[in-house]
Length: 194
Image 1 (cartoon, rainbow, N blue to C red):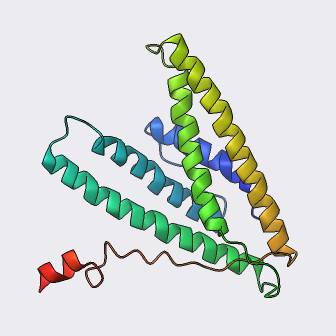
Image 2: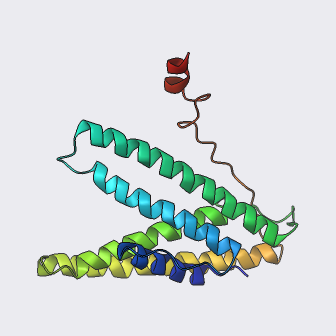
């Protein structure tokens, strides 16, 4: 049974373990495995983007990081679709007359994952020894807001899931159809290959 609030705990544990250089625990089910893989892509993407913002980075390192970001973003989006496919299978036939929800559960899981990373890094800033008292206070307030936003989003996702199961709402698989990594769709890639 899908549980968004439990998923936030999986995100938090994974974030903590990865920052300590540990691997993730074995997920209890296929949906958790997909959500954890998707969170790993977000985790890696977050840290690659940090490298891209290094003012001392060389052109060559920025180029390498940009390619990593593109690859990770593709993984992230592919995994969102796999999460939605798994949830569609779990939900079974949907009530086609029910109102369509504009955002898929997989996209909401992605937002929860990003919030977990923001919460972790904001907590680091709120407790950093070298930070000023004002910096710590500002980040404690940011941490409170981020935690509330994540709790609200998880509650909304759980409510949406129950509505889907009762036939009161429905969602469709929305393919991301990213073009930038496809040599048949990105003009920079297909004109160079000719």
